[in-house]
Image (cartoon, rainbow, N blue to C red):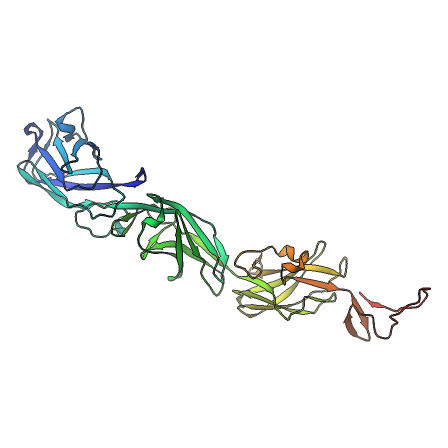
Amino acid sequence: MMMMGGVGRNTIGMTLSPNFALYGRDLSHVFISGLKGSELNTTVRLGSSLPIFCFEGNPARPGYASFDQATATLDMQLCPAAQILAGQVVVVTFNFTNPTARQASPDIDIRAIGTYVCLSSPMVKSGAEWNRVARGHDPLMVVAILKWSSSSLTRAPCKGGATIVLSGKAFPSSFGVAMLPYNCSFELNGVYSLTETVVNGSSIICSSPFSEQQFIMNFQLQYNGRMLDFGVPTALTHDDILFATSDAAPYPFNVDDGWESIALGSPLQGPADGGTVIFIVGYGFDWRTGFKCQFVSSNQTEHSAAVVRSKTLLTCATPVWGLHHAAATTALKILRVDGRGQEDFILFTNGTVKEADANACQYFPQYGRCAFTFHHVWTMTGNTVTLDLPPSQPTVFSAAGGQELMVRGM
């Protein structure tokens, strides 16, 4: 389907079979009337470009016909040397431009001088065969061509709610020419999740769906229960029926697991000898998948295993720290480990629906509950105490110095 000047051209194809023979020498004509509302030039090129029909019978203009605007009739005159025998099938196609107005398809009448010309098969309308709707012998009155060709997101947190902006082209100028609502459709194994949309000129805004765990979904834009597939120009008729002009290609959309923060009440600091259990709040955690906690500073990275407690909760114990400096504030990151041992960082969204920078956690405490601080460890009588000196040791010292202080630790 082609576009021109903001409106769509529609192709009509038909097979003609006359009841009686027609001869060019007898100045035979075939008339197609009832094209009122269609916009045709005075001279119409016939898609078959056969020398059967000539413009006003002129053999120098084969493959053309004339259109009378006043009577809305296409006049196809046989070339002087041409003939169509009784029962012979002739294929004729031509394009007409549709007005951007909601009006019913015109009734078509086909006749020739002295006799009627029968249709041996219905008109061939634009659009894939499987996507057509039975409409008799009327052409399609297309009021808009809709196509979305880009998406602001190809992945989003599986907790849902991320804003997706679909951009593309709509002729005459806006997706708003359509009268019925759109939906964003996310399909997985034959199950569809629909989210509502807002039309904003040549863009459509919707939100990502909720999913209990990470998946790759098939993403489509839906209008009135029919699919507007990615990159496929789709004709919209006056009565809100869609006709795709080519077959669809899948558009994959990832919904991912991720984490939000260290849980309220869970410690944000602990001794460098490890073992402090922290609780991590997130979404989409699958107990069949392995996870790791990663603690990162400027000069050291350590890992510890994580345990899935629920779809929204992980726990992990802090690792032993202090390869370079025992005291450090570290950024926390979570890795997913698949059955082949492949590791991949999961999303960090920091309480939002957008991916956040976990590295910022170690430098900006106000950024969120996403960093863990390791402290020096002081050991006495088998007990671990953070920061404070053992109670048996002096805490007030002489300015002259010389007092003995015993410290064991790491």
